[in-house]
Every structure is written in structure tokens, then in C-alpha cells.
Length: 166
Image 1 (cartoon, one colour):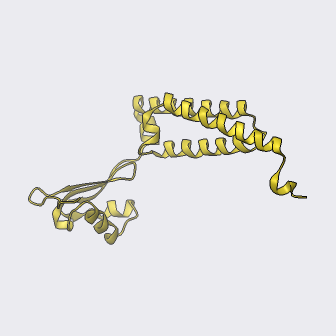
Image 2 (tube, helix red, strand yellow):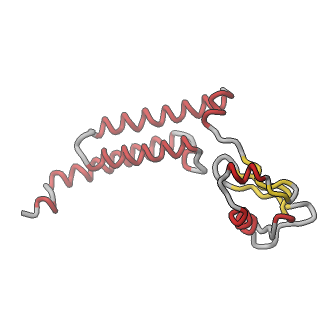
Image 3 (cartoon, helix red, strand yellow):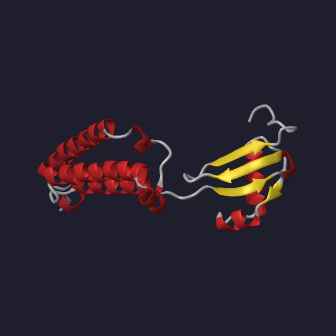
């Protein structure tokens, strides 16, 4: 009667063992792989993270794919990610395809209109970024860049320094 809710205890045991094995395998794979995989992610890093989550979820909770199939998928994914990382450092063409360019938002206290448009930002969005970096306003900013990984770099004008606590 409650089989639909509780399941079969053999299935529960399978899920526990499979989850532990695939988790440990991914931890080992990430440990062997690049440190950058878990820091500020690029687009392709994010894609790998999503794919790993999907593989872990399917492998842990169902009998198909098997643990070995899930492990194979994890290994192939990490090898492809590592290979692409090498390619993007050695090929300008691959680098341009994979990586975004930084976008200049402010130079010399003036908004770069084209940059703001490319970043899909409004002036209030930009002003919030300045405040978050301890810069009071546009006149106090020498350079503001939206970096390829989504972080903002804010360089105050030489006569204006960031305020304490920023």
C-alpha cells in the first residue's frame, strides 16, 4: 500500500551506495582536476557544473545509468573540460570563441554608453556597483569594467580614494 511512498528497501540501499560512490568519484575527479573549476566560473565551467550535477543526480537515484556509466560520464566530462582549458590558452581562435571580452562601463568619470548597453545595465545599476566598491559617484571613478566572469573592477580616480570599509 505505501510502497509508492517508502519504496523497496533494496532500492534505498542501492541509492545510498550509488550516491556515496558517485559523490566520492566526483570529489576525487575535481581534486585531480583544475583548482579553477570551483572558483569564479566561466561559461564553460558553469556548463560542466550543471552537467556534473545532472550526472550525479541520475546516477545516485536510478539503476540506469549504472555507477560505472555515471563514472564514465564524469571522467569524460572532466577530460573534455581540461582539454578545452588547454586549448583556450594555446589557441587565440578558441579563446575568442569561449571567453567573453571585458566591457568598459566608465572611463575618466564618464559613462561609456555603448558599454552600458552591451552589459544590459542602467545608470542606477552602475551607481550601485560604484557604491558597493566604496566610490561615491561617477566623478570619483577613473575606470569601471565588467570582467569576463561577471565581476566588476572599479578603479577610483587618483584624487579620490575608496572610503574605509569597502
